Amino acid sequence: MYAPKPMRPLWPPWLKRDKPRKSGHTADARRQPRIPLTHHEILALAEPFTRRGRHVELAGSDRLARRILFRPTEHPGTQDGPDALTETLVLENPGRQHFRLIRTLTDAAGRVATLRSDGPDPKVLIERVDAVDPRRQFPTLGGVCVACSYRVETDPGADGGSPGTTRLVFLFASTDLDGIAVELDARVGHGMPAEIRLLPTPQRTFRPPGDLLSVLGWAWRSLRPFDGGWRAHLRIPAAEPARTPGVEAKLARTLGHLVVTLGAPPAQFHRTWLRQRWSALARRTLGLMTIAGLLAVGPGILMLGAPEGSPLRLLSFVMPAFLILVLIARHETPSVKIPPLPRPLPENAWVSEPTHRDGLAEAGRRDPSISR
Image 1: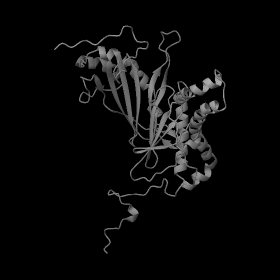
Image 2 (image 1 turned 135 degrees about the horizontal axis):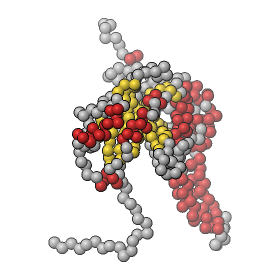
Image 3 (image 1 turned 90 degrees about the vertical axis):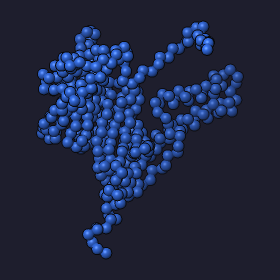
Image 4 (image 1 turned 30 degrees about the vertical axis):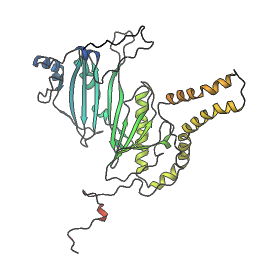
């Protein structure tokens, strides 16, 4: 049956919107068909790795996905880090002349840290990855060992032709504080805040106040509950080279604060941070007060009887648009709820009680060996 063709516009649109690219697919990957890796290609790509003592694990490699897995290697412990680290390398070829090398490190406690490097030459990638000390990804911050993941970034040379210098870009960090997993996710866009997540185990009683982290300063936002735990935004520098050192410094301060706070009775938190809690309350209500003030300015100008054609009368009509610009510039949604006043915390705010597999507290269980 005949179907009419859709009409084409008479003129091109004012703003052309490109379709968003699918994650993990580049322009080279779309042009290049998925040709499986041959045995000779694997040997050629693995040659610089073999020279450095890495050997291909053919059973774990995926030729169709153009993914080469190398056998795990061990990094012995040192005086600074006595535990040994297990290293696993994965070389991916997502597009023409585009390779991605991922190093995964695992310590004895099960913490995992990754290091990623992208480029056109696998030989250069393994050199960049080996130049980073594995212990660099397991620093001790606030008295706690943290697994930090990075991406190797290359700055172009001054003349445009030299390779330039390399630096580490902070991506993710995780650790455990007596049954509470602490994660810092900095894999965000330019100028966006990072996210701190507190994930307690089912056996851990953890009911923190909203200002547990915001008492540290303007960069730390209030905690909000979500499925599985609590999370808060953290303001970080927008670009390198200030971004990674800034994130690491705030991570160290956050962990040090949590170690001291969770190791003391909950009532001490209110006594120690009373002034900072009231300051955090004022900052938390700042967004609500800003919205209320901007909404009240427009009708207030009209009620004062601004003359026709005056700039003040025009300002009253553009105030809603100005409010939208303020909200967009914040990169986060302000809280429109009235926060509770700072009060002393209950004694079981973050006290954990050992539990049995069936969910009953050990303190309330009866020894089965004792007869009634």
